[in-house]
Image (cartoon, helix red, strand yellow):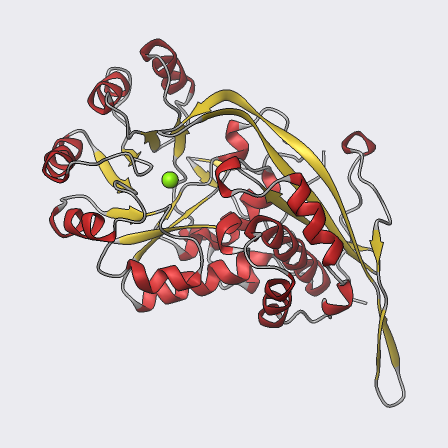
Length: 374
Ligand code: MG
């Protein structure tokens, strides 16, 4: 056995169901017999938001999350599936998917290409719960190898980008208050895409001059008006624009990308590996999220593909605990921009908040994800 120490177990307050699913696998070499026993356990968890979160199309106050553990010989890998409502996964779909999983397919050393194909063979889509499994296996792999995930992925912590912090749409008074409370963050991301976009930027500019990212969440419709607005946003210290037009309207996004003085980033139009190639010519860059890519293995492939195509890369997140945020942070040094504020926006994160210094997540030398239990 490697020398890494297991990370222990979740506290009872989270209420993990144990021994839900257990399988055994045996490999025989000539004179040896190694037995593999991977135990997958999971628990639903309602992750509460500090503030009601409003974007162009809806509002919410919490997010259903599935917390997973994959245990092997006393080592425990932690994973998380964050199932934001608009991605159509639920506790029910996650439980149904997990019941199909046969852990004898998770042989160590892990072949993530095979594991990814196996999970896809069980059901299409379901990318968040697949990401939860992938993250747990990456954490477990790091612990078994006694190496941090970021190191196994070829990330350099010194190249960690600043992470933006999102301010949701609200009344001007509350938005000003939220911006003032966000003084420690070096970049603020603003959700636009309604009819008062200019006022929202002006409200934020009345209390801070930090650089801004703008996320229109597909809310813009008029091409010429949008183009004029990108020039105005540039004057306001905005650095990039996420998903201006409908994800299905490639031509409009491409038209704006060709003319915009600011980088235009695909988000809703960017789900899995196959979307990366389609983004070329329509966007300057892509926003990769583990819950859409189905985890770290696919996200890393998407980063490499984007680099090949000369596309910029942002790594984003959903409403997530420290677990999925650390998985994103392990890949963030390979990206141009990070938008990993998930655990900063929640009020009942069941894990220790990782170190956050000068607007950046700090990657530790701990094996695996470096996730610490409360
Ligand atoms: Mg977005």
